Amino acid sequence: MSVTKPKHPLGAGESESERNVWLQRLPGYSRSLLKIQIPVSVTLATTKRSIREILELVPGSIIPFEKPYDDVLTLEVGDQKVAQGETVKVGDKFGLRLTSITLPGERFQRVAGRNESDKQSASPQPPPSAGTHPGTGSGPGE
Image 1 (cartoon, helix red, strand yellow):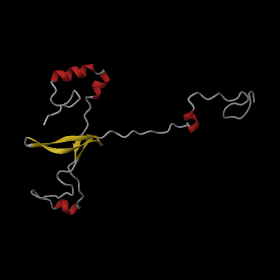
Image 2 (cartoon, one colour):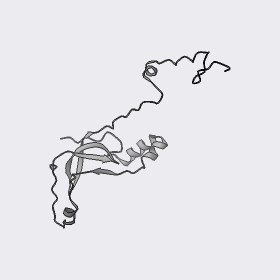
Image 3 (tube, helix red, strand yellow):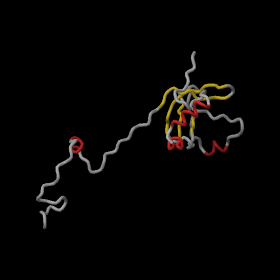
Image 4 (cartoon, one colour):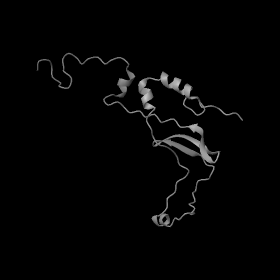
């Protein structure tokens, strides 16, 4: 079984000098963006319980979940789901092996004031006729 290195230079296993060379090639504004810290979380499972059940919890209590232990986990950055993976043991700790990356959905919004005929025509629309001013309906000099 071979271990594949991450394809980006900031991945684990890359040397400090390799990371520094890569960072120095980036424009200043991009380097400043890399300093922003945002929460990264993996939720193992969720459940709803009554306040009474929560108040009855004591050390050693077990909270059962419906999710199987080997089910796919979701990695969230900020409040966006960005990847899915599986639980792995790393020494005496656990980690997440990514199995798929979730690309953000693209959102398109219609530009106000455009209609279907404007979209089909690549050339600019001719100016209004010389007899009227747009929006007034009156001729010149009136």
